[in-house]
Length: 281
Ligand SMILES: Cc1cc2nc3c(=O)[nH]c(=O)nc-3n(C[C@H](O)[C@@H](O)[C@H](O)COP(=O)(O)OP(=O)(O)OC[C@H]3O[C@@H](n4cnc5c(N)ncnc54)[C@H](O)[C@@H]3O)c2cc1C
Image (cartoon, rainbow, N blue to C red):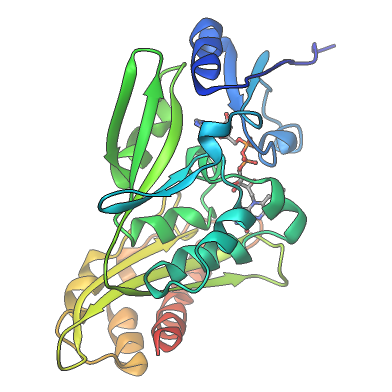
């Protein structure tokens, strides 16, 4: 019989970092637990030791800094959605946080857990934060480093033990943004595909710059840079954006999964682009 994991409830950030450093590869952070609790269903082994982050006050803060909004990794999806509601430039993130999963899960699941779960392709907050050019702060007992979210996604599979994602920094901008997701049947299902969009407009109302991220289609969410380039300088026109997305969608290789085949995930992208552009009006 497999032994149950041990649990240590950290009450401060230094205590959490100390505990993780001492556990080494035997330990891992436990935030909301909504992913970890399903490890047996996915036939994945549990870690021998979990360091609980729920009692770490430093991780639950949301602060305006000089040029950015700094969001603690322990902020739940529902708290995040409520805190940033009504800000057009952050609407993509408010919708990602406020419409993911279901209300009970949103009250437990955290920003840090969403970004750190390397095997979770359908994470809503990842594309939303990619299109906002977010950075992440990674702390260890020896110090803290800051890196772009896209770089973190590349290395999170091999993140050394003892590392903790502590904050996400979203730069301030004058953009408008929207999040379009397609759950297969009903709210609560994982999204089949996600398009997150953020744009700035020029004096004539045309798109000055577009940032678009696609989630749940491939294993890891990423920016759609060819579509971004095609949209720059174009009018804000949902049908034109749908047409451009149809022309360019063949760069994606969709992942096959129990809920949808890969080709289907790619085929819905132009419709999600159109929905995201309409939502900007
Ligand atoms: C039925 C169901 C439906 C869901 N649907 C959606 C959905 O549609 N969209 C969506 O985005 N999410 C959805 N989720 C939530 C999903 O579990 C994760 O996205 C969730 O955000 C993980 O957060 P957590 O705090 O629960 O992480 P946990 O389960 O606590 O941890 C997940 C992983 O991240 C690591 N970790 C956690 N915090 C940190 C940190 N600060 N630094 C380093 N590593 C860390 C843990 O060690 C673990 O490996 C759903 C969950 C359920 C159960």
